[in-house]
Image: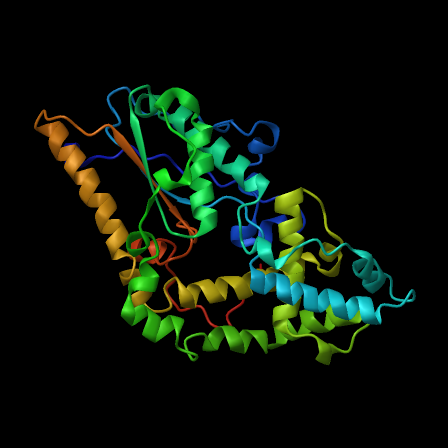
Amino acid sequence: MAPHRAACLLPLLIAVASAGLGGYFGTKSRYEEVNPHLAEDPLSLGPHAAAARLPAACAPLQLRAVLRHGTRYPTAGQIRRLAELHGRLRRAAAPSCPAAAALAAWPMWYEESLDGRLAPRGRRDMEHLARRLAARFPALFAARRRLALASSSKHRCLQSGAAFRRGLGPSLSLGTDETEIEVNDALMRFFDHCDKFVALVEDNDTAMYQVNAFKEGPEMRKVLEKVASALCLPAGELNADLVQVAFLTCSYELAIKNVTSPWCSLFSEEDAKVLEYLNDLKQYWKRGYGYDINSRSSCILFQDIFQQLDKAVDESRRGLFVSPVQWVYLQQISPVNQEGKCAICDLYAKTAPTHSAGIIRD
């Protein structure tokens, strides 16, 4: 790689997940699960911060960051399924079935109006993330520098952008009005604007064949029967979607309220591995390597990012003024492990496709 193209990259330091179920919640996990030091100090840059500092000869020119929204509430669909399951337990729970009785007494506080909106914890997540990013690149967030935010039209992304901006404080003279954030669905929700992806994956009932097969497979059937037994319900009254929403409720309660929900008591670590695989399987076929169009649909965002970075490098080499604007892109889906971004970068690729019968145990 030529010297002028060299990049100063910060390593992604993934810590061992905490014991229990917390390490199996995927994108519903707390930041603290992968960065335990944040539990003690949410502004900490981590134990390896010194090693990750830019070399003295490397001067940052411009920053373009793609961020997922902060911790959110369940979607309206998830809340409806949870209400359905909770209602069944309230109608059928008996004192002789302690797990069902405990869950029947659990206060169902989620309302459909919450529908995936940013939770207070999510606002703090984004404020702290902004302060950590500014601490890591102080020259790029100095006074008189400008910050531009592009977001999808999803309310949780707009709310995350406002929280991120608040986290930077008054130094950049930024307001708090969400209307100052550029809404660009063509760029940020590129999958909705790719006709081929919509036709071949999003609206294609057969595209998720492997996911549906796993839901009916032996691993999922074992988890379903175990949960039904704990709740003293016939197995026929449950399905994979209801079991999954119970598991997700465990994750939401931990992420939003920092409590261990009684819903967590239904699952062992082995169960969590199966449910994590179910979610991974869906993301593989819907957003990852499953179909070639998944990665191709994200080209528009990557093209925008790298064209602007190339422009900054070229301007710097020619001694021209480099724009002081730092860009932050906010999306609904995680840029780390979904949306085809790993696929287009050829990250974490496997030599064989992920299938319904492909669950691997250590």
